[in-house]
Length: 162
Image (cartoon, rainbow, N blue to C red; front, side, top):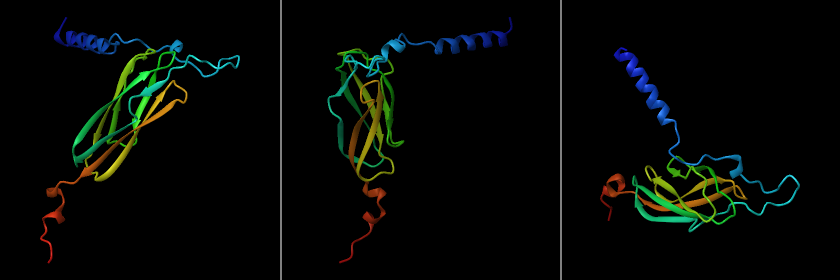
């Protein structure tokens, strides 16, 4: 076997091992519950997502600063909670969420990174979370008062008229 063949085989092994799950449980159709069953009865064992707080205020931050916060939540329902997506209202707000089912009673968190680059003043951004709960979309918020540094504000360097 020559070096090229060994390289190709090694590359294929690396790619195949990277595609495997890291021990996390796969989501199955048994994890997803509907509000109503086929016979029209309401399903009472739905998951339910409860956040410790639904709005976080970063307070005063400097323009260009990146800040982050972890929104803690608990599945207070009767079945596995699945988050299918989480998205910020703009590219400056990036959420990271658990990809595995969250069992009843289990606590987890959604990490949110906010970049204040190019922003100023009072800012509020939302994060939409799509789950298998009823209702399926939950919205949480971040706020900040973004201050432009004096060196970035040319009018701050000008002398004032008397």
